[in-house]
Image (cartoon, rainbow, N blue to C red; front, side, top):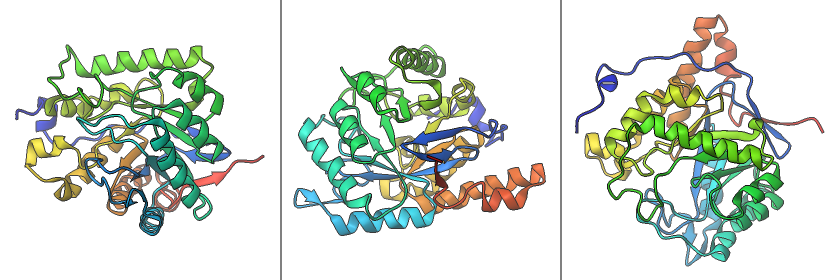
Length: 323
């Protein structure tokens, strides 16, 4: 593989965007003044990295799920992202009721036990609606609210929504993806989805953008998009980066999924230094520690190192909004 020229010279630092963005996640505030870690909980049998680990005989493995959530929160996750449908390359969509059972079942187990924000990784309008009613604080949609009824459902919840770029669908997205200009095309798509959100009453303050690493992109596309991530950040919305354990790593290092953690941390650090504010990962503890070094460096540059280390990346960095 030939890497883009901008990645050959090594990792370089760009200024983080201004602090101050706070998402209202169903009454909880998520301060994105510094990068935050989002822990991944896949309630699926076939997700590419951890499929089946949280299921037991077709049902949810309650004890394992709680242990996983507790470990992630203790390690520094600011929120947990629950998914009931695999979107790995080649994945087939699950039925609505099955996805509801998985997502709502996980929320029913976790919400009484853990005082945190729960995001739901879904494209299904009914799941958005029911998850909101069961305490979800954010919608994370890999299809950017393109399923019929999704815009209306998301708007009605008043939750923050993450809009992700994907070329094609999970079934077809890795079948020879092509772009004239991958970063430009991604930004154009996201602008169109932002406008669709506005037309349906979803305000800019509720919008997060995800360039969709690994979703309808070659290894070269992914690394070019990462090198040019500041263009997505420059659109003026918080950016989520999901790079954890993805196949772009294997395109460089030929590592199996279970051996991609060090490279995943490297990618997370690059994304954060280029302005991403939410880093979606499987390996929370290691990623949190790496991002804390960015906070310390930024604090040293601004003369506020103590605040950067104790407040800028506080464990479970959420708080209840004044009611």
